[in-house]
Length: 147
Image (cartoon, rainbow, N blue to C red; front, side):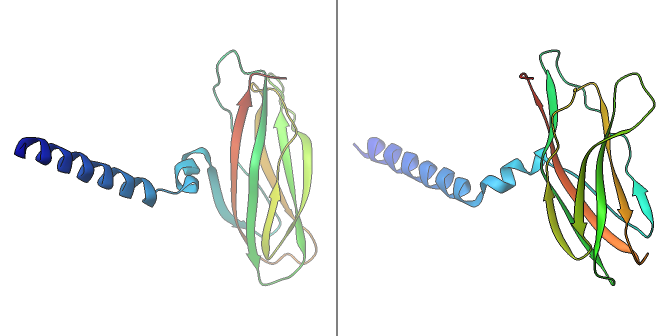
């Protein structure tokens, strides 16, 4: 009887510990590994590196989801965010989405679908007064089996 009571106490203690750890983890923290991040600054324009993922052969389309750019500058106004792709086997960049982003604040964006074999990058172009703009860009690259 004493052993059975001790076993139940250990099971209850284990359940309390597991539920306590589960309560500390938020859904946003679990998904942080999905996000890619890039930060820096520019005065006139900047082009990010070419991002190219390796996906299984079942991936038919690709898109950029849940993108956001947070910027701050001493000047007000806006700048242009171009999402560009480079089709597989070519050297030319094609703009697939244009976003007007605030120099002071957060702007959200997504991209249309394109081939998972294509490379992509972000081009940020300053409009108006060429003051320094600090930025942080986050996005989720997402491959899908549907076209």
